[in-house]
Structures are given as C-alpha cells and as structure tokens.
Image 1: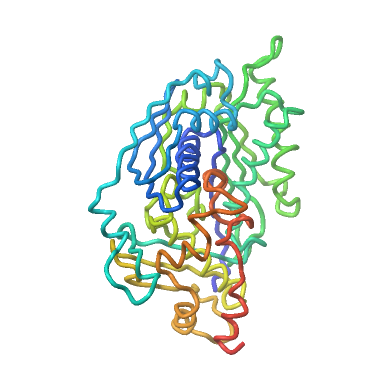
Image 2: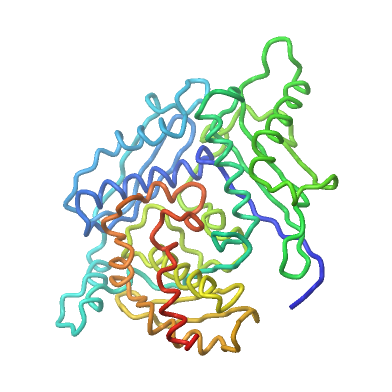
Length: 403
C-alpha cells in the first residue's frame, strides 16, 4: 500500500445540465414503455437544444407512449418553465423519431429454441464489457470525490426547487471536488468548484457584487452542508462561478445528448468504464443491467470485509446468456488471506450474471419503489433505494469462504 500523498478529482452535473435533461427524458420514456409492457425492448436517445427536443431510437413494445407529454413533464419537473431560458417546457418543439427495433437483434436476445434453464432464454442484447466498483471511503461504499460532487449539485437543486433562499438560481449547474489522499485515506478537500446558472443581477447591483453574493451563499448553504468540516481547511480552494456571469445555460447554452455523462453516472473516474451509456436502455441491454450487477458484486465483496476496494469486469457476446468472462481485482486490499481468484470463484457461484437472472434479481422489468428516471441524475450508484445497492449476499459470501 502506498503512503504517498496525491490528489484525485471527480465532477458532477445537475439535473438541469443539457446532457442530463436528455438522459432524464430518455429514461422517462423507458419507464412508461416498461410500465405498459415489461417485455419492451427500448433504445431511446434524446437531443435537446434551443427550443427543441428530438426523441429517437428503436423500440419493440405493446405499449403506446405520448412522447410529447412525457418530455414536457420531465422538462417542467427539472425547472425549465420560463421563456427567458430559451428552452421552456410548454413552448419547445418535441419531435418523435422512434421506430421498431431490428428483428436481427431481437432474434438474438429472445431465444426461442429448447433450453435447459429459463435464464438461458434471454441472450445479451449486445457484446461488450461492463465494470462495477466499490470501496470503503464512504458509508455507501463509493469513492468520496464523486459522492461529494453528486451531493453538491443535488443540494443546489433542492434549494432552487424549495424557492425560499437563493431564488436567483436557474437549473443548470456543475460541481467538481479534488481530494488529497495519504495512501488510501482521504485527508482533506483541496478544491471545490461549483458553477451555477443564475438570473441577471438585481437592479442597482454590479456583476461583481452579485457574484460575491452567489459565492457566499454557495459556500454557506451548499459546500459547508455537504463537505464535512474536518476535511475543509484554510488551504481549501473554492471556485464559485470562476468565469463570472452564468446566465445562459441549459439546452440553450449547450446542446444536450443522451449518454454523454457516463463518468458522472458511475464512479467519477475512480474505476474503469466499458463505454456503454445507461439511460434510455431497457434491462436486456447489458450495458446497463450488467453494470448494475457488477456494482452489486463489488459492493457485497467490500461490505463482507473481503477487501477495501474491488473492481469487477464482466463481458458478453450478443445473443449469448452466459458471460464470456468475469474478472475480479481487489487491488491488493484483500483480507483474511484470500486471493482474488478464491474470491472470484465463490462470487461466480453466488451471483448469476446472465441477463434474465439480473433482471429478475433486481426486478428491472418491473421497478418497485424506484424508477429509471431517478437514476438519470445524481448517479446510478451509491443511492440506497436502488436494488443493486443491497448487500444481502454478505453472509453467503462469508460462509462460502469459511469466515
């Protein structure tokens, strides 16, 4: 274990960031499709820009979805409800370009031949590799930098929606947190960056004076609420709206697309990423479901005290149910003298990583107590209401390894 000092940074964006607007619309469409038909096959992409939303992709379903209605509901909930934002829920154009999925793909996913095991019936929706990760830096067994970054923009959004203080806030925002480590231990926060969209400065107040108010408000009401005081010191740098005025934002400021915030969605760069985005994809798409399952495996391994950190990779071939490969790495932090190979052997026996087994384990085709749209902002991991965050396999892992 290294005891050198180093810095590590992760970022997040708010629900009003244009790429996250797109993700939430795509996942809201998915929610409605699988609500009407749990066997829906959905690959829904969204494009948002000034006054315009385009929803496209491939769908096989028995459901009928009002694309315009759902898109406008999502945009309203996020907070784009004023004409001056140049992207407003009731006045923006919404174009649907959804069409049927290729039967060639469907044939591989829905296998009709005689099978010995029900879970072999559903093959992977595509080839690819997915990663899961867990570490003991936070109670949620997530890397600390991404957890802090997610909470900063979530608290900012909560304040904006409550409408009691900081009433100048607009929906678009970003955060970034730099931590200083000694070895594997977080010792302090070195830098925090928060950029938030805002209304024009009030009459009689200069831009510099208004930015000073914003900076003070964010430090007191957001940063000090999220970051433990013990990690802040006089050397911590706080960059609040470092470029100054940030009035133009959201889809008017930058075009947004589904699937462009894959590191924000996962571990903030602390773990590898297979490259496949999540939002708008039904659970037969292993880009999504297998990444959730890999997180579940990694989290249970760390929660069981088998390692301080764990990376899990799983890979698939299109149309084939069983993974092509599984790889587990505890980065030299394994406990009780177990090798990674020994941990992996037991994990493969306990966790069924075939797509249908994953879907059934987490009820991904019939979400209860959560929805896909919730995952589309503030991270897919480290939030206890999602079923892949449960640590119900801890005792089984311990027993299998004789602990």
